[in-house]
Image (cartoon, rainbow, N blue to C red; front, side, top):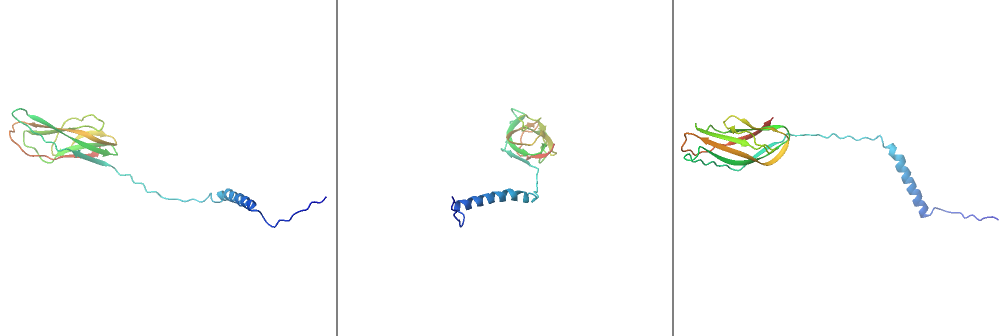
Length: 165
């Protein structure tokens, strides 16, 4: 017996889709190595700047009644942000009258207090050993000592400066 063969004139839609998908997969597989040697380069500029910020809060006022005491205290606070090992220096803008001394001590960002320092026009270290940190509401203690002064009204600007440790 002889079978009758049908002649086809084209592909069905499903057959065409299968062929297209197989060709696409082969194209991706074979094209990958062809583009493997393509390299793109970009230069990235990197800038790391030093951060040294300090801000002081409060306007401390020291009232002293010489008849009762020879010293009085006031408080303030400061915020600090540094990205390197640093220290804080302090000084006042003018010489105080003879017999009057203004001291300051600052709370280290780690929580401990530094020693009390007599302020003058020359900057003095009030906190050292500060590692990179961002810390808020650190306390500042001021102490005024007067001997032989019975009347004085004035003010002194205290400057706090961050420098290398």
